Image (cartoon, rainbow, N blue to C red; front, side, top):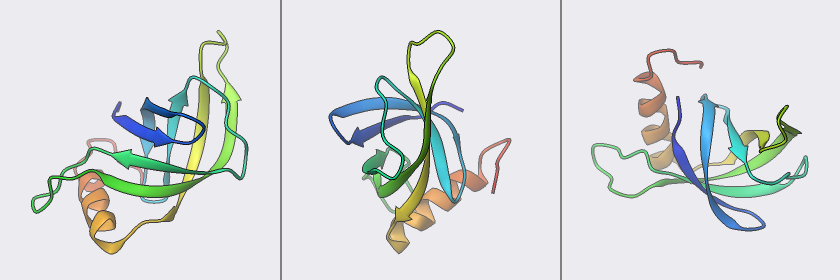
Length: 101
């Protein structure tokens, strides 16, 4: 699965996810983020009743460089997500073919 996300950390950038679950996500970033850092992510999942992106604050759990040194993989845990956005996110995850809950 690859979904483009807007990330607001040191810079406002667009990144790709490598996996997502109800608890968090893994994404590829062009720079290293520090473990424990809180970043805001905007996800373009659109629900039946919503035309806006889902916005969530995430804590960086880990960040490692890839073998080629082209990007970093970062594991994020959702820490602040409102109920409406949670519903949209969970519906999206339930529809994934190889979901991880």
